[in-house]
Image (cartoon, rainbow, N blue to C red):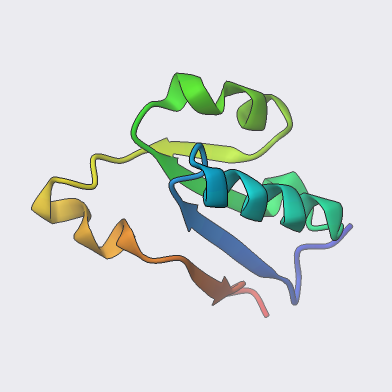
Length: 80
C-alpha cells in the first residue's frame, strides 16, 4: 500500500481510555499501523500497540517543551 496521498494520525495519551479507543478505531477502519504515531508518558504501557506496528513516542506532557503535543492532530503526507 502506498503512503502517497494519505493522512497520518498523531494521538496523545494512547494508553488512556479515549486514546486507546481512538487508536483501535483507526486500526479497525483500515488505517495501517505504520501511519499512526502515539505519544505516551510510559512507553511500556503501549508495548502492545508498538508490537502491532504503531510508532510509540515517550512524552512528558508536564514539560513546557512538550505542550504542542497536548492536542490530537492530523497532518497531510508531505509527499502528496
